[in-house]
Amino acid sequence: MTESISYVEAPVVSGRQLAELFRSCGIRRPVDDLPRLEKMLEHANLLIGAYAGSRLVGVARALTDFSYCCYLSDLAVAKEYHHHGVGRELVARVKRRVGDQSMLLLLSSPEAMEYYPKVGFEPVKNGWIIKRSG
Image (cartoon, rainbow, N blue to C red; front, side):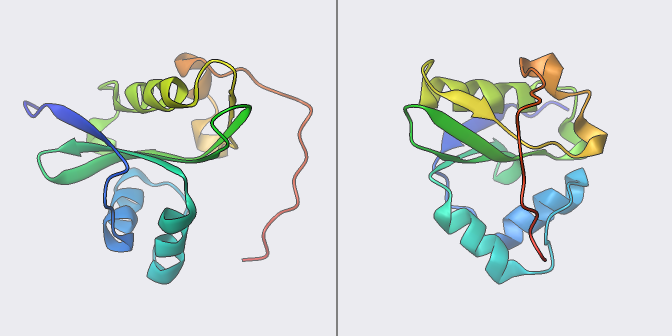
């Protein structure tokens, strides 16, 4: 892989591009529901994209108050770009953007549980969830 990766805050990303990225990395998201993906993009207030040329190869999508809490709802990197530091850089950029006074939290799929400690996350036991219905 000879292409360099560029990072863009607040990129214009379509639901189709996001679906393609999610498919390429295997993350479980509603990839066949483009209106829902568009809504996910529209309502996130922190989005950072990683690009190889014009191709979206990574994304960090978050909801934050930029002061106390940041929920990293999506961290996705195309499979062929795994182990190249793209995810680590996306997390670092989110953390820099929200600042040191803001916690960064996320929910992980079982398949990714071993990854997050490698990029600075610690497990927490004091969480609760009401699961979505669809």
